[in-house]
Image (cartoon, rainbow, N blue to C red; front, side, top):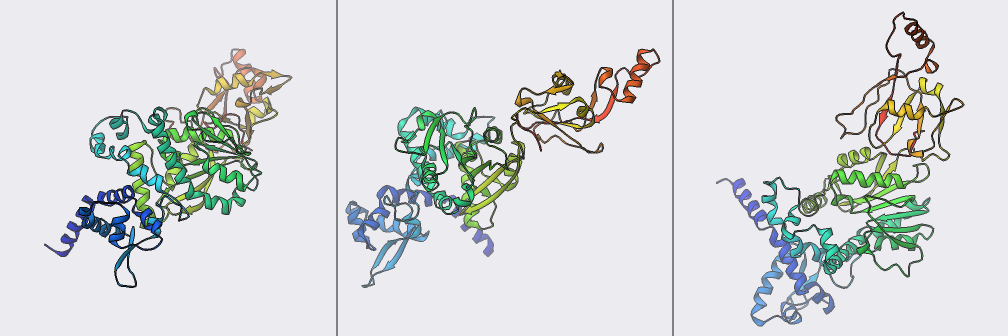
Amino acid sequence: MESNEYQAIAELWKLIFGFHKSMSLKCALDLGIPDAIYNHGQPMTLSQLHSALSLPPSRKHSLFRLMRILTHFGFINLEQDSSSEAVYNLTPLSRLVTSTKVAPFNLLPLARFNLDDLMQKAYPCLGDWFMQEEKKMPFELVHGVDLWEMSCQNPKTNKFVNDAMISSCCLFTDVIVKDGGDIFKATKSLVDVGGGTGTITKVIAENFPHVKCTVLDLPHVEGDFQNEINVKFVAGDMFVYIPAADVILLKWILHCSSDEDCIKILRRCREAIPSRDAGGKVLILEAVVGLTSAVISKEPQLMFDLVMLTVTGGAERDEQEWSKLFTEAGFSSYKIIHTIGFMSIIEALAMGCATLDPPLTTTSSNLLNTTIVMFHETHFSYLGFLRRLRKKKRGREVFEDPTKAVTMVNVPKTKKTYCKNKECRKHTLHKVTQYKKGKDSLSAQGKRRYDRKQSGYGGQTKPVFHKKVYFFPLLPGSVVF
């Protein structure tokens, strides 16, 4: 065999036994190795570590073998003391998972959660899941319920999940505190959607007291907010309603959801915020796959994607996929304002829209000379819309319901506008010929045709105006400026 074939065999063995890395890490955490070294106050010899862990004498050599692999992948550092004896010390990696916070972040609860049998049992079923037309994810097939329902039913699991989510918040708090002046300088209110016990929200409220904060989550998740002056908890479902605020915060929410559910959530967020000019925005704390070419960032992103595929049915998304979600949810633009390791902070901005107050009024003359732009979540008959439009009062059409508000926008007759709803197949209206009945609403040419028909001189059955009417399935209660 050639040298490259031997290299391929070695790489194959690394893949086959790759799970030994995570299992040796789990063993180290179960034994408390990082805590033992930290509590000792200085690097430890093998004998000292063996004694501190209270292991049976027969396990000393086995401990050496475990420490050897932990040292190999950088979890523990092997050094020599003044007497040239080998000693073990913590590294920046192992400092992240000590019970006592000795690093900027403490990710021990998050590590324990992902290494627990609760999560690990689902992965062996992934191959069988691919072979079936099964809507349930592998996690649900193994446990009978999905992770969120299990959290509702089991207080122990609920605490397990909450502790892991609290642990993950520390990845973002430092950046938010450091650069939050730019993010929240014009913000008066914020809603943390799916914010759990409110860890990240409390940090925002403490450092930016002018921001009134709300945590929205399911009732069983509620944390302790009694002593919080500027933070309150609202029990609710993000798919149904999100309280109004200047800024909506989504931390590790969308990667747990399918594209369809993400669009629903983002539309609810869009309804809850004011216009871009008024400071309305949605802050999304998620991974953007492939944003940097560094392997150290992309590999955990892809691994997280497999976790989402197996457990929640969600996904980690690249920038193009994020852009598509924002467009379909009615956002005009977005920008990635920070990148923290393999995670990013994305700022999604609403279109230049605002709910009408007072309601918009328009005239019939505008109707015949301009393009109608409608903001509704679904397409409906434009003729039905025109009938609703003709609620006249002294020649004016009054829109009493803000969700039916439209504006008239002058465009060249040659302009083509396309439906922005990529999911719409049947009703993708590029252009529509508008029909109207009644002489009073006709142009001069139309009136002549109308008179000819009434006089028996022929003419078209219906006067036709080749003015185009465009339909956009955007958000209720909004108007383009």
